[in-house]
Amino acid sequence: MKKQSSAHLKRHRQELLRKLPSLTEILRGSLIERYKRCGKQTCWCATGKGHGPKYYLSVSRPGASRPEMDYVPQEYKEHVELLLANYKSAREILEDICSINRELLSRREEL
Image 1 (cartoon, helix red, strand yellow):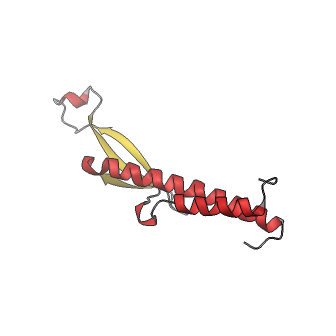
Image 2 (spheres, one colour; image 1 turned 120 degrees about the vertical axis):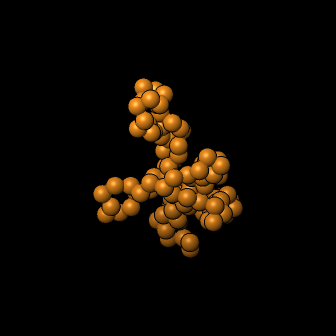
Image 3 (cartoon, one colour; image 1 turned 30 degrees about the vertical axis):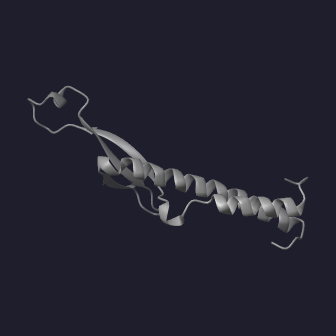
């Protein structure tokens, strides 16, 4: 990045901004797949893998001892996966933009 011109860095920053997903289409967390046993001794799940898969969104909060878990119905799974991927992409793009801004700042260039 140090060898690139300031004009190139600013153009690249604009390209990154265009790649940002819509901020209404992002979700932070992890999708957890679980299989649960129902508790009936005669059910096949008592000796098998369990009923499922069931999906849960796990979100850690600062200061919380455990992550929050929210059930995700099967019909929402794909959309939730997309929102999670968008969050990851947005985070990576923001890190790249910050790197460009730090480089411009170190050159004493206008941000």
